[in-house]
Image (tube, rainbow, N blue to C red; front, side, top):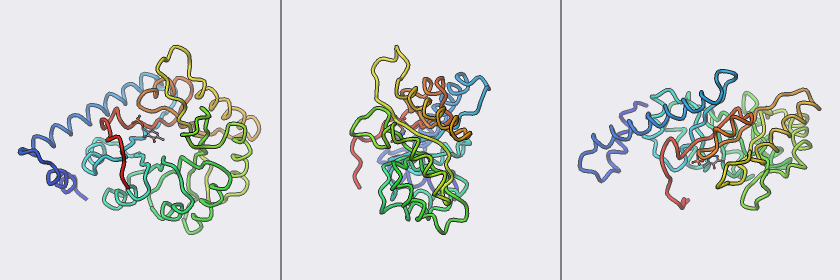
Length: 256
Ligand SMILES: *Cc1c(COP(=O)(O)O)cnc(C)c1O
């Protein structure tokens, strides 16, 4: 698919009288935001290690994703299964999709059928791991998964309790042959002040360390969003998920 067909779609949707100007403005906005985020990541890592940037494109049009794609971005994150299915069909096949939304058992098969699904970051327990494992039966290669941990203990956030994390990791590693255990993931509590280091991120790093000590396996750590990705990197994140800072604000409510 060419960049033009995606942009054309945006033109059609746009009510602006001068769509060309609109498109060019959007391109400049997104590429300059991306450059800025990349620089900030680089400044935090100082080439000591690689940190993957996942551009979170939920609720954003295909034309936005294409702009970032043309700028070299390949990892994108989506929260809604149907939206991901549609976007993955319409966009280049070398995009590496991350599913980062709440994972429902009855959607695992649909997800598993997306050929360029790169990872599911939101496995939230042993049961869900088993369902996802089954759903991947006909996939050629094991699917990368991250176990989501509810480090902040908030009801609105998904994931296993920290106390159940190691057992669930062991279960995936030992019993789910169609899943490749890639890492652990958390959102953490939203904080107004960042004077002290985020205890939720520290908690996740400790779990990673414990698993390494018990299994000799170094898991990736997915933490850090628009508001806190620099702090997350400082504390050891290897995978940051950034949406708003790249693509701008999203509408408050998402309708299915
Ligand atoms: C939406 C979302 C993000 C991106 O959040 P921003 O604040 O827009 O950067 C990251 N991770 C998850 C799990 C999300 O749902």
